[in-house]
Image 1 (tube, rainbow, N blue to C red):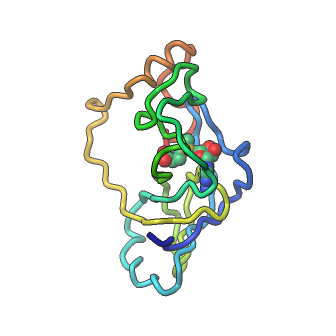
Image 2 (image 1 turned 90 degrees about the horizontal axis):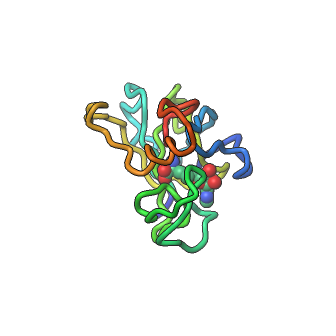
Length: 156
Ligand SMILES: C[S@@+](CC[C@H](N)C(=O)[O-])C[C@H]1O[C@@H](n2cnc3c(N)ncnc32)[C@H](O)[C@@H]1O
């Protein structure tokens, strides 16, 4: 796979990215798609939200059991969003603010500046909210005394 573009994000360091229970991601930036792929963005501006599939290019190695900022207990890597995974692929839902040619202005970034973008797709949610289960995160939030209502962010 080759990147289709790169993220221009105000987030220069991992410490600037909110983590933990109820973390909200409100950072705005630009998804810069390669000019030769611009025709592929045709009709995208009608969608409010996008899936951004990207590479954890600054992660090394993986842990099959891992802890996260949400919980001191370890969980299987595939039940977390840890950057340290066998294939370092990430998924973030962003709000599309506007399109300017091959530059997509978006809100909701949780990736570092310069991150490679692998793919974009329109976000279409079809799962009713009352059918969603949040697995171990619900128990971790209860242990931490957090309401399950997010304080910030969309639970990327
Ligand atoms: C918990 S991951 C979630 C990413 C994505 N929303 C997902 O679910 O796949 C977000 C964290 O990845 C790390 N990160 C962001 N950009 C990265 C990059 N380019 N390479 C490696 N790690 C990155 C930061 O520490 C950030 O807080």
